[in-house]
Length: 136
Image (cartoon, rainbow, N blue to C red; front, side, top):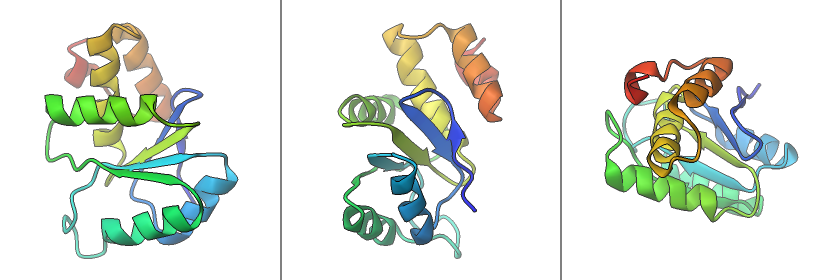
């Protein structure tokens, strides 16, 4: 069963998804998948190419933005561009979902789109503590 965690109407995050979760993402209305996990991080992790092939077979856009540790400016900008360019709701995932929501929240804070306090609240509601990453 998938663990897609609603953050906003345009973004949900998840721990590592499987190829079979891609069809569920499509059924739930997602139009774009963002993979924030570097390939080869764990032996049981499906390669990015497998998730990408499943996404394309379902008619979903797929973006691989690997993040190692704290996301840097390039990853934050790429994530924001992918989400802004999506035709509909986005599902971003990594090992636990933490890098995905952190990368998104840093972009939102940088753009001044959502206050840091509100971002921390959105993270908390989805099961993530963003206070350290956002300095809030």
